[in-house]
Length: 170
Figure (cartoon, rainbow, N blue to C red):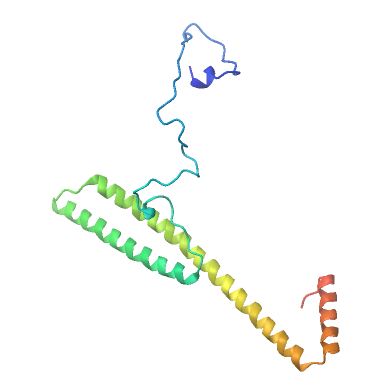
């Protein structure tokens, strides 16, 4: 019998003589008031921030590049430690399998964070390039505006607005 069959409002399946009715008493577990497996679970106190969940990605390109350098250095150190453990195991010196498994998992997560970070750096570079192009366009327009009479410039603006309204692009 499944626990789901005991929920109120649920009609259990037809019972057969081979499956007797069992009464079950359900009690609250210790700490039932605590949130379990939710995205809003507070991080445990005393645990280093880097060890809980994926890393927070920085907002600036410089911070992204600095964090990437740190992640690369950490990944290289971990790979070297893992290689040394395997080398010692080949030579006959045993190593702690629990440490090895934790280190492999940490390396996997580090590489995942590096991938996410590289994607974020690419996004930030694209945004910076688009922002620089918009600034250049504004400067070009200011120079053109200064060199033309105001009524001629406004005439060009009206022509551009008409093309945009028609969806014509060159």
